[in-house]
Length: 314
Ligand code: NAD
Image (tube, rainbow, N blue to C red; front, side, top):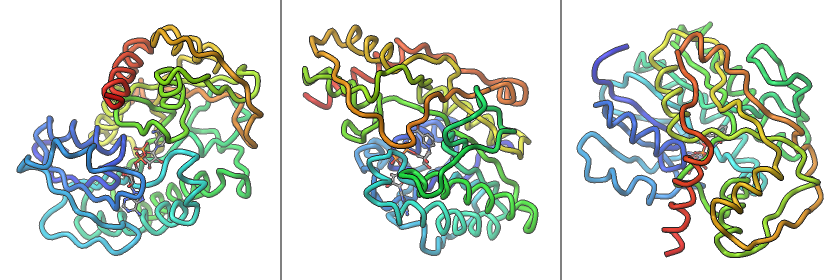
C-alpha cells in the first residue's frame, strides 16, 4: 500500500476517528467520514468541513453502506466506547460491533479495500495474564455489565477473520488500550476526562475502590501513529497498541491534582462490577513488526488534554 488513498473512516466524528482523519489527511489521503453522531459530535470534525479531501456522510453503519467510486481502505471505528455510553445503548453497541462490522467488511470486499478493525483491550476482559500479549484469549463475562461491548468486539474480530479467510479481504485488527487526549467528552465517564473535569470544577475526584487498581494511558497521537503503521504493514493478526507504563488509579488522581493545581479532594466509591484490577499492553509485537512504541510522556499528554478541557469551559 503506497501513494494517495481514498479511505473510509467509520466513527470519524468521535474522539479517535477524528484524530485519525486528521492524520490521514495530513498524509495526503482522501477521507470519507461515516458517522451517525450517536456518541460523536460534528465539532470534532468541523475544522475539516472545508477540506476538499474530506467528505462527511451522516449514516448508521449497521445499515447497508453504499459509496460511489474506489475505496482503498476502510477503518472501522464506529462504536460507543465508554462504559456510560454502552450501558445506555447496549443494543446499538452490539449491533454496531456485529452488523456494522459486517457492513464495513462488505464494503471492503466490494471495493477490494483493506479493512482495519478498531478492537479493544476489553477482549481480554479481567485478564488472568499480565501484561496481556495478543496470544492471550481473555477472561470475559458475557453477561456482565460490559458484556455488550466486549462480546461485540470479540464477534467483530471473529467476523474480520472470517472475511479474511473466506473472502480474501486484507484485514488488520488493532487492540486499542486506554487512550486519552483532546476531544474526549467531559462527561463520558472514562477516568481521564472525569478526573480532569472534576479537578477543573474544584469538585472531589471520584476514585472507585481503594484506587490500588492499575491503568495505563496512551496519548492519542501515539495511538494514531501505531494504527497508521499497522494499516500500511502486512501484520494480519491482532496487534496491541497502547502505552505499557502502568500506574495506580490513586497515583493518577494525584498527578491530575498536581497538573491542574486544583484544591479538589479525593472521594472513594464502591468498585463497579467486573472492574479490571490491572490492564497493561504487551507491545512486543508492535515494536517488532511496526517499529512502534509510544513517545508522548504522561505529563505532556495530560497538559494538552487539560488545556483542551480548560478551553471548553471558557
Ligand atoms: P467515540 O464514542 O468518541 O467515537 C465513536 C464514534 O462512532 C462516534 O462518533 C459515534 O457517533 C460513532 N458511531 C457509533 N455507532 C455508530 C453507527 N451505528 N453508525 C455510525 N457511527 C456510529 O469513541 P472513541 O473513543 O473514539 O472510540 C472509537 C473506536 O475505538 C471504537 O470502536 C472503540 O471501541 C475503539 N476503542 C477506543 C478506546 C479508547 O481508549 N478511546 C479503547 C479501545 C477501543
